Amino acid sequence: MEKKYPLPPFTLETALEKVQMAENVWNTKDPEKVCLAYTIDTEWRNRTDFINGREEVKAFLKRKWEKELDYKLKKELWGFRENRMAVRFEYEWHDAAGQWYRSYGNENWEFDENGLMRKRFASINDLPIQENDRKFK
Image (tube, rainbow, N blue to C red):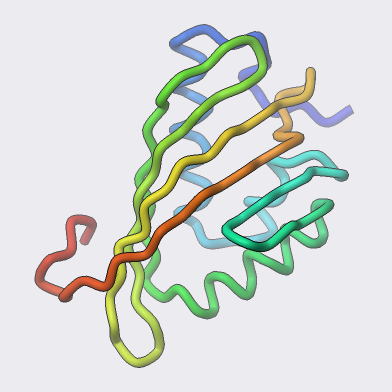
């Protein structure tokens, strides 16, 4: 059975660790690695996309990082209890035309007993920025 430590129920220390691990793996921009943090039958809502299962996650992330170039993400734990977390995040990226964006959002996460994310619901807004206004370089 796959396990992704730390496992729920979370403490403040393990919740912070889980969020940092998520930030680190997403910043690899490797859909093969990222999708391993999710259950085989994971459920996502990402903006207006409804994604079901690890294979759909992988395909979604591949498309995402083909569009969102030089992606850099920061995550912050907002709250947690038992096997759930609320996370706020922001990331920067640019499109093929060179327009930079800062994307802000919140995620609600639910984990199974093996520490794999079973549900991820993300609300995200994009703000066009100038390259010299970037925070994450």
